[in-house]
Amino acid sequence: MLYLLPAFIFGTALGSFINMAVYRLNKNQGFGGRSYCDYCKKTLSTTALIPFFSYFLLKGKSNCCNKKLSKECVFVEFMSGIFIFVISLYFLGYLNSFGVVPFYSFNKSILIGYFLFYSSIFVILATIFIYDLKFMVVPMFFVYWGYALVAAFKIVEYFLYRTYLVNSLSSTTLGKYILQTDYLNNRLNFFIQDNMWSLLVASGIALFFIFLVFITKGKGMGVGDIFVAPLLSFLLPYPNAVLYVFLSFIIGGIFGSFLLLFTKAGRKTAVPFVPFLIIGYLFALIFGDAIISLLV
Ligand SMILES: [Zn+2]
Image (tube, rainbow, N blue to C red; front, side, top):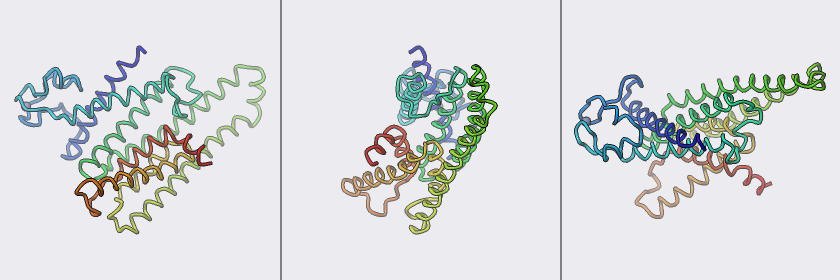
């Protein structure tokens, strides 16, 4: 329980980074340098830099020029705090981890490594989500970072897994005997085959989206969706990695019908698809196994 408040505060700081990233990507600015006020361009005071809480400390107004602060930004910081809070519940064992926390997370530093990996994935997905929602464009810069992070992490995970196997086997006499057989190599080959299978599934999903962009002549799906859809599939085990695409279409379809029925939106209204992919991904992560056991 000791970790939960810091987790929330860490989340609001990530949320503040997400707001900054969305803003600066849109203006084509770099991520370096101190933040300044949107209105009067003065560098922000230390109080104004505190994520989430500064909104209440400053009573919703900037302390340089007394302008209203964006409610949207505070909301993003709050939601980000909540997300990281929930993610840390998984890592602390209060919630079913859905395979997100590996069984071989035998020590604290590995667990923290996994937590930081998923926090970074959260930042990348949240930035893509908000950016696509606001500007109807997928920020490819963050998509590339997503792929780089997943690739780097898979390599680290391979060595973690290997270390785990060697350590746990060499601690017993029987284990030492097993180490002399092909067992270790077989396990590692399974690990590689698993990831090759993920790669194949991701390629299939990419082809499916290329096909969709082709038949809708780019009006239904954007090129950004071709890249985001396979990225998410790497973050799920096999049947769930396909299921999530179906779920995102169902959720998108339901949302689209609501728009048609209850708002002025017409058939031609453009709706960004990445948010549905990410919502579908979250559904598949949490309810995927339950849905699959119902279907099979
Ligand atoms: Zn100002």
